[in-house]
Length: 243
Image (cartoon, rainbow, N blue to C red; front, side, top):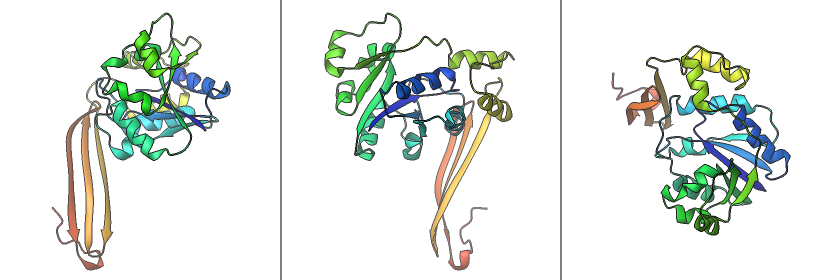
C-alpha cells in the first residue's frame, strides 16, 4: 500500500488541500492520503489549537474515499514537530507498505534548512507537487530522487481565509460549509484574544494514581501547562485532592 502523509498546519484547512489530496488518490498515484496535522510547527505560529485544526480537517474530508486524518503527532506530543522526528517515529509505527511524504516544490527547494535533511530519504519517499517554475537544486534531486507531480492551479490559502474572516468578509467557496460553521461556533480567527483551556486525565488501580494535564493557550500559543499525579485510596475516595 502506498500511503501519502500530507503534513501541514491546516490553519484552517480549505478546498485546495482537499483537491490536491483527492487528485493523488483518484489518479492512482497513492492508495491513501493521511492528513498529518502539525502538533507544534517549529517555525510558524498557529492561531487555532491542535484540537480545532484536527476537527476542521475531519469535517473538510468527511466521506472522501482514501482520505483520513492521522493524529499521530498529537498522540505522541511531538514538539517541536520537526519532519525528521515525525517521520522517524512514524516509520517505527508503520511497518508495512510505502510512505510518501507530500510537499510543495518550494519546500523541496529549501529543504537543506530542515533538521537532519540528509537522513530524510531513508525514512520516506518524497512526492513533490510542482508549482510554477520553482527550480529544485540538482544535489537535492540526486539525494531525494523525488517523485514530481504536476497539479492544478488552486489559488486558495489559509492566510487569505484568516484575513477575510478577521475583516468580516465571506469565505464561502474557499472551504467547506461545515468548516465555516465550526469556525463561527468556536469564534476562531475573528481577532482579539482567544483563550482555550484543555484538561485531560486518567486513573489506574484502586488504590492508585490519577494523572492529569492542564493546558492554556492564548491565540493558539501555549502560555501555561501543568502535568501531575493525584493519589487516591480504596473505594475511589480521594485522599490527596489539591483543593
